[in-house]
Image 1 (tube, rainbow, N blue to C red):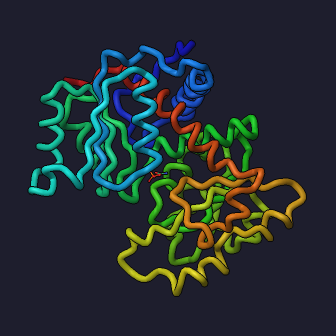
Image 2 (cartoon, rainbow, N blue to C red):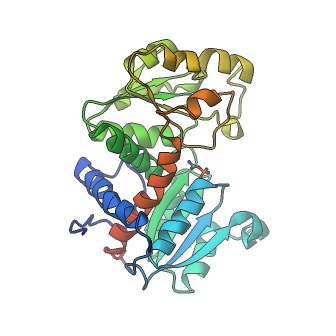
Image 3 (tube, rainbow, N blue to C red):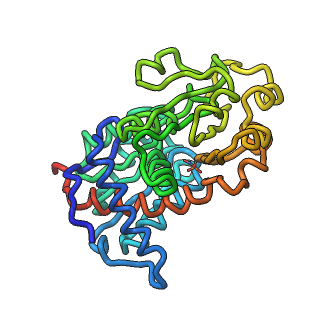
Length: 312
Ligand code: CP
């Protein structure tokens, strides 16, 4: 039974949330996860809502996870992909979305390559807006499902040491995770090639650790990031082989520890580059738990935002 209210019409980023609001979402997700384990996984909570999933960038997990969450809550669902739409004919984002809203859509889930696109829409349209990833800026539902998976495994986030390994510079997952984990009382450290770690990172409250060996020694859990080659305008790395040699998470790293290292990855994963298969598939990998928990987190976010109408 979910009694709390978020009091927010949009989920644009973790930056805008406080620890209490994040806690409400994680607690609500626990209730929805129980529903996902029942023989009948569907509830009528959003049967009066129509939700459009607008994906202007590729996605596997986030798009399917949102669609499944919406269907589990009995909403009507519209899926839009930029590659097959009239965006290709020059239509603006606002015109596209206004046309979709004219069909009486209540909520918008948007993934867009431009940072701030969901924030722009939230200011201009009378619908709840959920950010499903905006460029290199934020991916709030990914951070929430990562936090949920860690809390589920360790029992609490306060005092937990979480390492973020890899291409932090181009990662919206990293930024949302840093905001979320620090707000929830965890410690965060980042590690990666100096060219892929932003200079300002320590001002956010994250520490910087130079080597994977040191990170693995320090952390309770490591969230491994893919190198976002599609976002790199310059050559930040000599080669992927060298990256794997110096910054890949390997079986040796986890075997060196006396206690198990918990491993996360938001996907999509490049096995043999940022992570060895033996690590991705190890007993203490939460990678598939993250995917399962993502549906419960998205059900929680959709349910809580639907209680709060946007200004029309
Ligand atoms: N984690 C994540 O956003 O994956 P997709 O790009 O497949 O949605």
